[in-house]
Length: 219
Image (cartoon, rainbow, N blue to C red; front, side, top):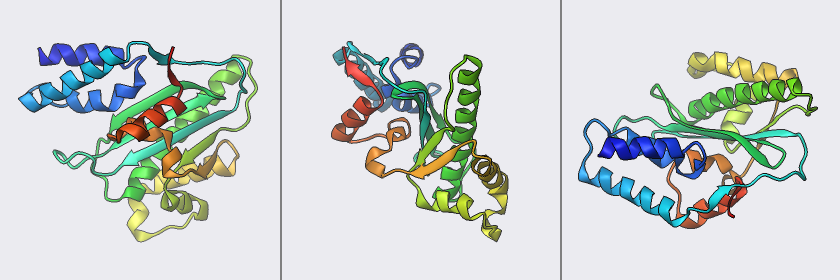
């Protein structure tokens, strides 16, 4: 029963991105679910049942500028000491892609976690830019927002430190993209970091606010 509920919710995440993170967390316990996990899944179903008219809203009055938000939750899971990475990507005001994923490996610091999601998000924006250009649309170089000053400073200064040797390939890749003006990275405040919806549980007020900012409305 638990696996069937998870499979149905995973199918639903194709359009209900607001439940991506919590569904992914609950999906980890399919082999040995407990009553607490079943209670959590029922709460998700209750939330979905209470918001049946919420949908992604797209507007015509927008530009072709690509922008993305990326964030990482370091050691978010107490079970396996792994965190989550997430991102959302817009063409103008319209959300076109998003991700919510648990990190494959143990991460030694929050800066390393942020650099990891910066690398994957940068590659995603570059691919989106190539795609829309093939469709005949003209776009400026993408803009990526991150809320971690340390990660941004790390690649802007291009400083090699002994403790960062294991992440030099990510460091160099992002620096080259910025140097060639294929992407720009800017800081964004935590309150305006839209990617947090995809990486960790939030208090009700903040969740509802970010849900509106990513384009989910009651239609």
